[in-house]
Length: 453
Image (cartoon, rainbow, N blue to C red; front, side):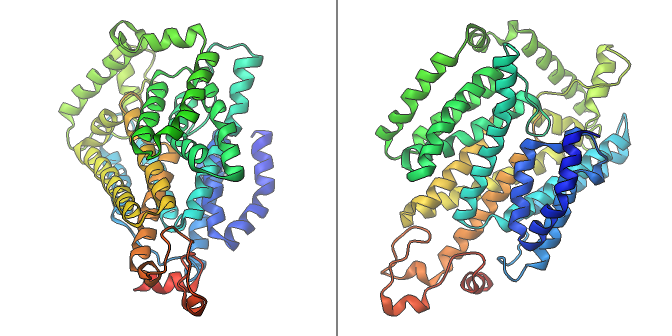
């Protein structure tokens, strides 16, 4: 057992107290632990901090359910939980190892529970703001590993262990998912948040270059393009994009640009050729196991047998989340996944439309940031097996939380007040009306009353 994991266990009593006192602290702790990732330091599943904190946060949520918004099982949460249960069911028919499939199905069910916790607790723009900054803090924590490998060890391409233990590719995905939020804060933010965003953006570009992920680079470009389309004040974007391009040209090494040049000629690249070979093998298996699939995380072992590599132990993943879901969990697994993501996208789209009508910049900021993050993750799934990434399910949960928050806003009498100034937490009531004001803070009685209606 590692020293760092021992230190985490020493801190657990204090963390447990914080979680049981305030459930929102639990979901923020789970979010930051994705990057600190003590799970990969060695421990049985039921002793891993992620499992312990998930159970405690769930208990705390029910203890404090009167102080939090009314618990609702949104259809998005139900669909992802159904996917976890489907994985558990089809594990009984796994072609290589039912035990491996069961283990990963239980892990996926844990992600579904964490999605439910995020949807139930990240229910205000204040909490959403803190949620994004926690993810960014996690990326900055991983940046120290990037600096150590790239600068001090002299590696041409680094592979920090972040995300779901997925290394540089997982980190590059999260960089692309969070850069729109940083761009928003850099262009529209004020005070310390704007300064922090301006400081963080160069680190994001440096990390992207040091990791050298081609898919991560394309995801980063996609996020920037979508942000440009959504930003109303496009001239302001130039104050961020131009320096970002300059930093990319400064940080970008010959090795980095040589890798990026291979993107159009993917057929001549060994890595891309191997992925295409894996896709063909996977699709062949899916034809024979279209309904039940071959079992979660069974493909790496079966593919090595087909290729005649090793003794069947170890892993060559599909490198495509959609094909992997199809081959390992059958057509029902893929349909459930796409359905859950589609509904989450519809939720944030409705939030964005509401924000535009109400001229609510804060809701619009978070709706755009969440929607772009989801699209970047889906794009990265085309060349990576990333559907077990924790951050994605927190993002989906936060999208559901924002949707429920906007639903409360629409029913709030304060929102219909002619003296109301659009924008969360920005009310300009007459003095005589202040005592009748409805609070939109999740811990307030007013919020709970509106939620009951």
